[in-house]
Image 1 (cartoon, helix red, strand yellow):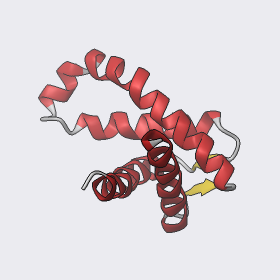
Image 2 (cartoon, one colour):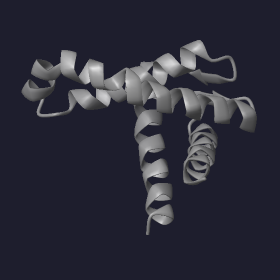
Image 3 (tube, helix red, strand yellow):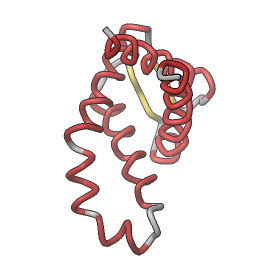
Image 4 (cartoon, rainbow, N blue to C red):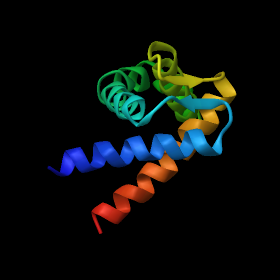
Length: 112
């Protein structure tokens, strides 16, 4: 039951990101639910592999390359989904940061 609440709150976080940033569009709450699910799956399955493959770059940049990986995953999700569009890399970078902050805030409210 808790995972469904986290999923819904992540979808709400995506809607907040789309409301704040003009370069990110979410068509509906249903699209936000699908996008939150896809982002969760990408972050669980693909991102760890990307982190492992880019470990030397991440070490050299003192971890800042992880922001680029977050943006690329966010941008990729926007490119494969119809109801969730990201206007480019810089919007993806900003959107991934805002999405992480908002969903992290929601997680703190749940697990308090």
